Image 1 (spheres, rainbow, N blue to C red):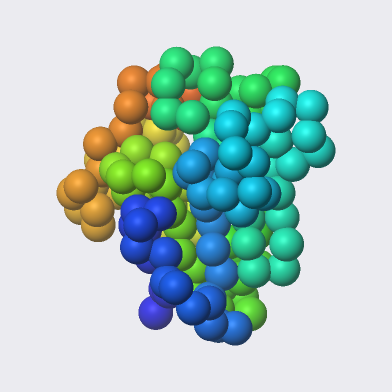
Image 2: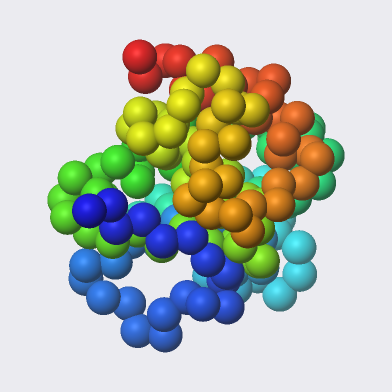
Length: 161
């Protein structure tokens, strides 16, 4: 059984269990976690990516495709997220992937993990999306994330073959 849960940041459990790992894609949570009152300072070492034993936070903004490829590290950052999920699941942990609405960013990372693990089609983003919609019909990816994943699919998924 795959313990991969997709949801909204508002569904984050109040009390973290030692058996639960969080993959966060919400810029709101990212700011709260770092106690930043305003926009995240772009020169901070954790501005885009922050990783701890049971938390992986990727500051993604659901907008134009270039937002997902900040500093030309978009595919690399996504591969880090996939690896984090794979390691947590291999340790028998549950993984909760969240973003603000649970419709675009968090399900996109779940889709990528499932393609990585050969659970859904990995030939292209479009084919993976068609398979993923059978598992998660609530998937409503923004245009920017769809463009980013289509353009960078081979950089993200194919290195794992």
